[in-house]
Amino acid sequence: MDVIDWLLASDPAISWQAMRDLADADPAVVAAERARVAHEGLGARLLARQDPGGTWHRSGDPAWIPTLFSLRLLRATGVDPAAPAVEAAIVRLADGFRWDAEFGSKPFFDGEVEPCINGGAIAIGSYFGRPSASLAQLLLGGQLDDGGWNCDAPRSKRSSYHSTICVLEGLLAYERSAGPSPEIAAACRRGEDYLLERSLFRRRSTGDVAHPEFLTLCFPPGYHYDVLRALDHLRDAGAAPDPRVDEAVRLVESRRQPDGTWLLDGERLRGLDVATGETVGAPSPWNTLRALRVLRWYHAGRHLTAARPGRGRSEQDRQPIEHTETTPDPGSRFTVSHAKHSAFRRDGLRPFYEYRDLGIDAATSGRFRAQVIRPNPDSPGAAGPHRHALEFQIVYVLKGWVVFDYEGVGRVRLEAGDCVHQPSGIVHAELEHSDDLEMLELTAPARFETTAVEPE
Image 1 (cartoon, helix red, strand yellow):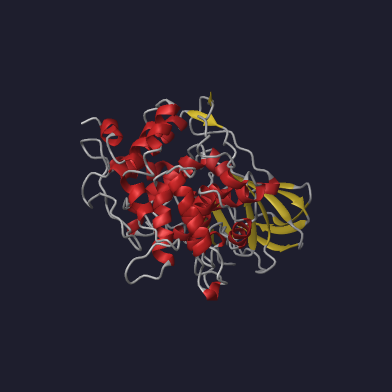
Image 2 (spheres, rainbow, N blue to C red; image 1 turned 135 degrees about the vertical axis):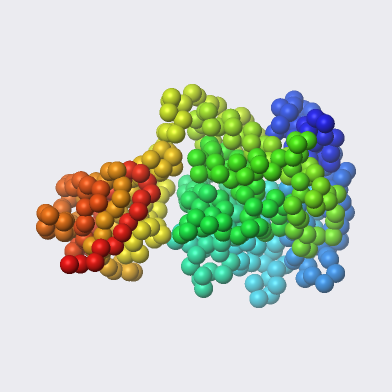
């Protein structure tokens, strides 16, 4: 069986995307195939389930649940927003749907309060020509210190994989509809880094798999996270493949069947009253489409360096990324970290410091790290005696002053412009620092062991 031919013979929602993303078909042929989605197959079935009042219904569910998840699936079909049947459906939705009174009875496109829901609402609204600036600002305001989002915030200070992927998809769609925004682009990069720092499925603290369901390939995903959904988002965002996706890509590759397809591990059907036509445990056109285009993106990008295209460009007008040859070192790539697009975070080695990662870890496959460090005003403290097992470490003071105590050396005061090289294994402690301290730290490798030492 030729897998591409199998996809091209599938539902129009799948075949037109396979033409565009896998077969490099003529744009006119792709457009003609896409036009079928509103009238045939899954897209047509979803549109037909909308009631005259603009909502979708399913027995036992409040109206917002089938409305939200039906529209999320409709967006995944890639139906043309300009199709008359689609435009009429969106007008009915705008006129007839309101969120519950406890959330202000707002129109659908202005969302409610939870980021996983609002991520879906802004993605839908933006895709169908109704981007909400107020909802975008609400989502930006809900980003947590570690870079992601969580529907349980502010009670929870740690981000959720589920909420984060929903918001990232939504903000990407918003920029494509409303136009580029440095603020949103920076927030998206922080959110993507939250996932990348965890290899897309691990706990940062222990390296363990964060949840077994992150390794299952499901469609439709609902609000649930999995590695294929994350990889497809990064591909769609136009990011060059980061070395931190390598393990997730290998996992997806390992799930390929002898006939070249991927199976459907599960489906999140909450709120849906329309069958996708797929069977759990059987070859899945949706998973196969997504996996193949992720692998195509990954394997092309591993040998080429690409500038990230503007996020505000429309998906329909997206052009192929122009590539240039890399340096001979495949483990190193060009990177720039602009201060205005970067943020200090509080998820580093010490809770009493804030850290601004300069992107060198990712650019050098973990061989080096460069970061700016400053005191955390909400958690004062100092590092007691400890040692690092690493190859290289220097600290350069950018601002303010700091006093260290070094084994065999004694007290050393560093002021702005001063630099110290700390050999591997030397016991040292920070004694005091100014409130305005900022230090540049360079280490090799990026990750190393730190051991506390009892004072003598």
